[in-house]
Each structure stands twice: as C-alpha cells, then as structure tokens.
Length: 260
Image (cartoon, rainbow, N blue to C red):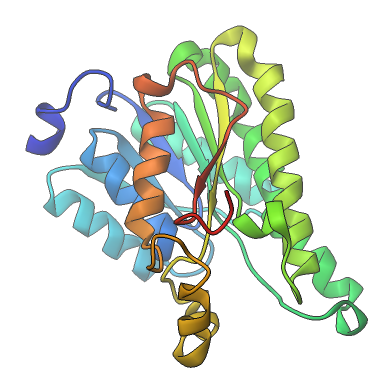
C-alpha cells in the first residue's frame, strides 16, 4: 500500500480490494486506475490493443507505491472478457471493483449513420459492459458488501446530442443496465452505479473542444471549464469506496453543470 492510502479514513480507503478498469491505458480509464491504486486497491489495467500504454500505467502506479498489472481484455469478445477477468482474479487474488470504462464514439447524423457503425458502438459500449458484468458477477457477489460496479456513461446518454444518436443510445442503455443490476445485486450488498461525464479533456474529445467550439462550449458550462479525467476518477473512487455503501442505482453527473 502506498503512503497516501495509509492516511485515508477507512470510509475512503480501498486497501485490500482488487479493481479491474477496462479501457485503462489512456484518458479517463488511466486516471481511474491511478486514483483507485492511490486509494489502496490493487488494479488490473485493462487494455484492448495498447499493451505498451497499459504497462506504462502500471509503471506509474508502482512508482507511486501501488500495485498494477496489465490485463488484455477486448470487451467486444466474450472469450477475451472471461480470460481477462480470470487473469485478474488469478494474479491479484480476487475481484471487488469493476469499472466499465471501455468505449468508442462514432459520430454521424442519422441519415448518414450506418447499421454497421451502430452495431459496433453497441457491441463495445453497451454489450461490452454487459459481458464484463456477467463474467465478473460471481466474484463480485462473493465480495458481498465490498462489491462494486461503476459504469462510465455520458451526459449525452441523458440529454442527447446532434450527430450522436448512436453514441447516446449506447450510453443511455448503460444507465438502464446500471439501474437493473443495482436492484438485482442489492440483496448481496453489491452496489451498481454510473458516472455521467460531460466534456472531458481526452484524445477522444480533442476535435470537439478546440478553437471556436471550445469557446461556445464553455459558455454552456456553469463552472466555466472543461473537465479533466481526474474529475471523473475521483467520482468513481467515491462510488467504489465504503463511504458509498448505501448508494446504488445512481447516476453521478460529472459535467460542471452542463446538465442539471
């Protein structure tokens, strides 16, 4: 355990927990992995293709005194999900926290959207989370009151956005999955929640928040700034902690007031 984790109050400490974060080789996923590790969790850093980037995240975690292992997990493939979770449990000794962060975005107006693109977005963003929840369920239920699922949805899943019908549908579906599983797992003490980020500074959003677009967007955000991956990671860490033991089925908005 790192020094920072040792001074945390018990309600925020994740010492003794094992977390798996999908899509953790960059952006929001990387920030989540690093914050969970800083709170004391051993973290499986999930990646689909960039093993080098995942190892870099693990190196950063270990340099800070935590424990991280790279785990290959393509959420669009059920076999890869099963194998990735099995490796997480084998190497780290269990699984208490699942963060479904892996996702893609393909933007298009409806008249130009293809069924192939729509299927691909659902396969990763929604079906991927479903596969991970299903494969991890027996481990999380065994963890009982320490069990946590946190799904990374989006403000777009709640309010929609022009040109993002496919993405919005996948993220709205993730909120529905969150609420249903919250009811299903509550009897064992396992909580299931979602975070819904607004515009966050990542390579995925770079084109949408530069130049004049950025200025126009900032006018819509009451807090007057674009969010950071750390903003989202701190929200995830709260939902994963003992402090949130009585919070389930909730969508925590991390959007600077963009949607209230």
